[in-house]
Amino acid sequence: MINKVNGLEDKALKWADVVHTKCINPDEAWHSLNHAIMKTRECPLAATSSSKNDMQDIMCPILQVALPKARIQKHFLRKLVYGTLMSEGFGVYNPSASQVIEHIHSLM
Image (cartoon, rainbow, N blue to C red; front, side):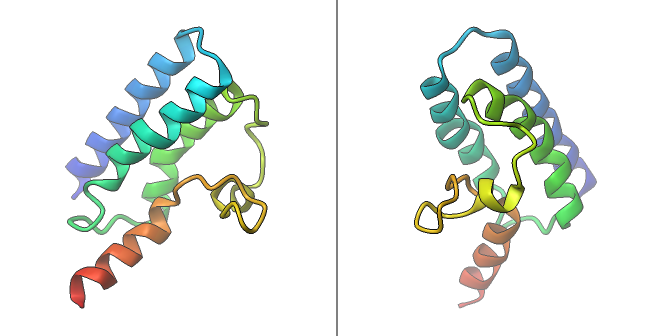
């Protein structure tokens, strides 16, 4: 379990380093966040049971780099960042909530 969390943290740090060092426009940063690294985070959710703190540790470097590149304040409230578009949030995928949903879905 710890190895999987460490592996996900390593992927997050590598992605954050690549995005941080490249000169990309805000649309590319937003697309990369939602369709590249978040899809990588989505895959192992049903098979793992990470704590909320582990999820926050993994997501911290991702959001600290991606939000400023997308021209969003990086200290924005996470409830708004993870909030749905209908509730005036940014619609960023919340791995903690999605993991619970995946676990319940697999039990059904």
